[in-house]
Image (cartoon, rainbow, N blue to C red; front, side):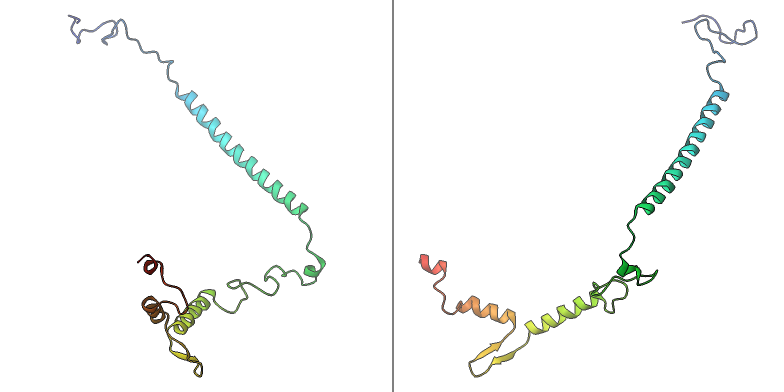
Length: 154
């Protein structure tokens, strides 16, 4: 430890340590600003190069595209708006909504699976709900089938 007082002044009135020195040339703001300016120029230049490459590739791709077939060209300039018939559901120009069609089909299937109806009354064939048919098969088994595996073990 030093026995010198910290308030002791030297040549210019500032305390100085013999091992520590500050050099003003270590940090120059002008150099930092120069690097930032060069970085900004590089970013702008790369943007311009990318825009040029994009425009060039678009023109190149458009020039290499095959012309439409004569049958399509005869339809006029708006031939790309609608695909030819038959169109898939949900595309522009189609009259029905595919989600509504699906809901209608599921509703019709559910109603068909839950109704009682004679299919052939003279031969005794009837339609019953699926849940009831499953209960009957679970209790009695299928007609004309052999004994189940649990009954064979006994």
